[in-house]
Image (tube, rainbow, N blue to C red; front, side):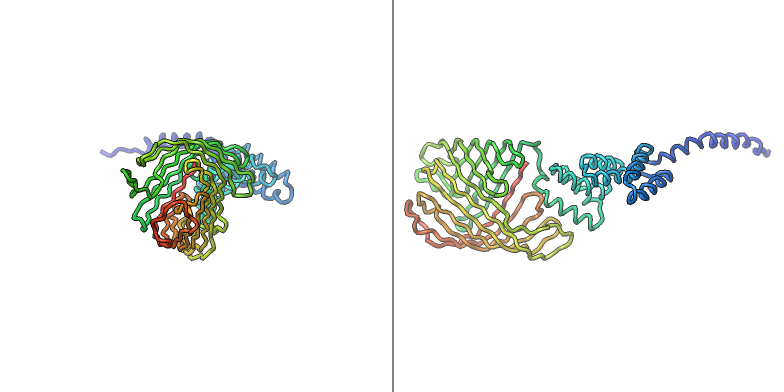
Length: 411
């Protein structure tokens, strides 16, 4: 038997047509609103008006943008243009708000992230700026990636900042191996406190210092190659002139000998002095996507002149200079070759505090953003003959090959 279905399908056809006609107005509304971050023909028409007025009639251009945003609040381009307009009017806060609105609609737009990065950096919101440049580095084209990564290099001190202002913490580790004594020396310095002043000129903090080496021994006649001690202290540090890399500090605490040296292991520790630290030649910029051989100058200077109650009221002065070339770099990593000269003198004329050393240094930085540096150095040293307060069992001249790992984290 054959069934004639043509008449049965006719009501279904009319039903489908009726539903389509009924839904047509709703479809038109949806098309007019558009998807978040996208523009409809109406948006484009109004944006064309904006660009027409942008050069000839700024007030009308602003009015057109405001009209677009009132009708189409999900238009990314309109929020972005409003951000640039407010930026030209020196309204940084308003520009940031508009760029953030645009970013909420197009979270992977590298141009928006770059603008937010520069504005947040200008507002001293360094960590937030770093995060914006990181977005641009992930999603931008090659020139944008390079620009964003270089900005991240400059903002590296804020990359790992965890504590809210004005609080801070920092850890400095510098273990090294000395071939001369076949010894590992492991110094640790940590501080946590509060920063005062617009430019962080004054700090109050609690500190922990510790030092241990692998060759020193206790006993009836202790063998001490390095100061094996732990110190808890409270201190203050001030930078009198923000333009100069000089700091004055004072600390008071309690020290405890980590090895028995046939004396009272607990003593007070008072120290105060002046610190100097400066990258006086710094290669810039660092980041490069491919292997490069820039051969750019770099160098730094560090100085420390301090009074120490625990060392028989001694005053010890230390100065180190490093200068050389950045010979290779790729990504955020770098290889440097430097010459180093350092010396130490003291008021009490102890032989181990009166030394001059010079020698070459090869320095590898895996990623400049993370504060880790590996150094290999070969030093030629001389004990200064004026040091007569203590007996020197070693030759006046010596060589020492060292492997050193520096790690600094300010959070």
